[in-house]
Length: 152
Image 1 (cartoon, helix red, strand yellow):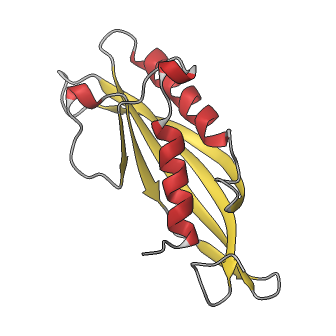
Image 2 (tube, rainbow, N blue to C red; image 1 turned 30 degrees about the vertical axis):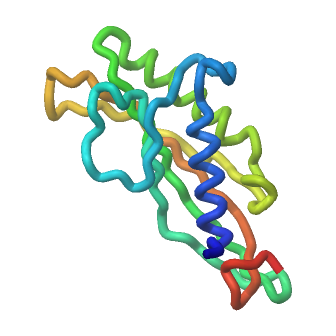
C-alpha cells in the first residue's frame, strides 16, 4: 500500500535519527527511536528519541500544489547519573546533525529547519536520572492539490 508524502518524510526522518551510532561517526548510539511513544522507556533503551508531530499548516500553491509546513518535535532522552547535561547536549548535537544531513528528506521535502529547543529534566523519580531536549523542526513540503500521495 502506498504511503502519503507526509508519512514518507516522517519515515525518512525516523531512519536518519536511527542512524545515530558511534559506528557512523557520532559521539553516541541512539538505542531507541519511537513515534508518539506513550509508555516510559526502560533503562536499556536510552538514549532514546520520540518523534512527535504538531499541527500542520497548509497553503495553496504554487499552481495545482499544496504547500505544507509540518512541525515536528524530537524528544531526546538520556539516562546519566553523573553528567546529565553533558550527555543531553551530546545527544542533541548528534540528532540535529543527523536530521539536517539531508534537509530534503530524500528529495521529498523542500527544507527541514531547526526552529528551537528546550532542555527538560524528569524529576518524577529521583532514582531515574533522566533528562534531555525537545528539539523543534519545521519540514516544508508539497503534494498535489487533491492527492497527498503525489508530488505532482
